[in-house]
Image (tube, rainbow, N blue to C red; front, side):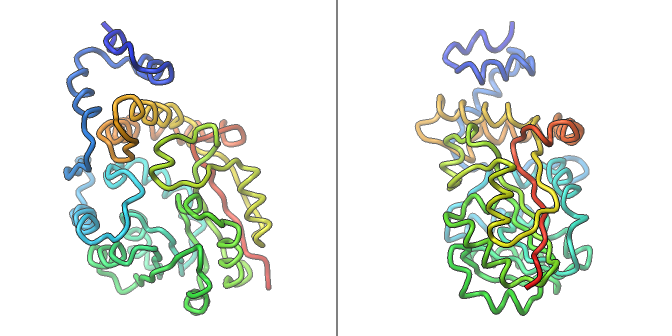
Length: 309
């Protein structure tokens, strides 16, 4: 008997999602445990081919030293297929000197330093930067505290670094005055500096998880192109990605609203769905992007260059 027959209170989007993946009643105890969990899991699940102890130590260090709340699920550390999918999207646009704003758990910082790229990793949280430096002890990694809402204070340091690429993955949506931030980055860039952005897509998908993560907005292809071009960037490409992830995002938001007293970005249900997607659907996302890129997706991917000054 399908699991959905036992869950009459689940709203239609989640009900359809569960039916689509044909989750059977034998999975009910595990699903209930995940839905009931409302605390950050200290257990990081790795695939047989991915055992990065430094990433585990970074998460533990972040829990101890971070000054601000984390704005992502802890499972983002262990979804190796998804990170490879993202890496293949943007690595070809990276130069030898990368300004990375919002390094997260360092999942891409490490890859860039291992490719002998100079990385200036910036974050609002100095405790998080200390944890990043401890977890990735590379001479090619430099860190700097940066508030994109007021980045003029760091203007000279960024200019001195002379970035060939500026990387913001799931960062711009956290910035209230995003156009001013993009304009400041453009003003300290050399002509030809590449801007790489990944942002959440489509305001219709905005839910409680966005609110808990501190998102001011989600974007369309048109709105992201407009704000970048008004800030002085010239668009090379802008398209939707990961349409396959939309049902999972809807399900995660709906499950949290039903089973949690408050929205939980790092709840057991969200982490379960992330790992489930990573294991079974990342490859499908990569294939579907060829057809859904002009239409819709869970995120918008943008590449642009700074105009000569």
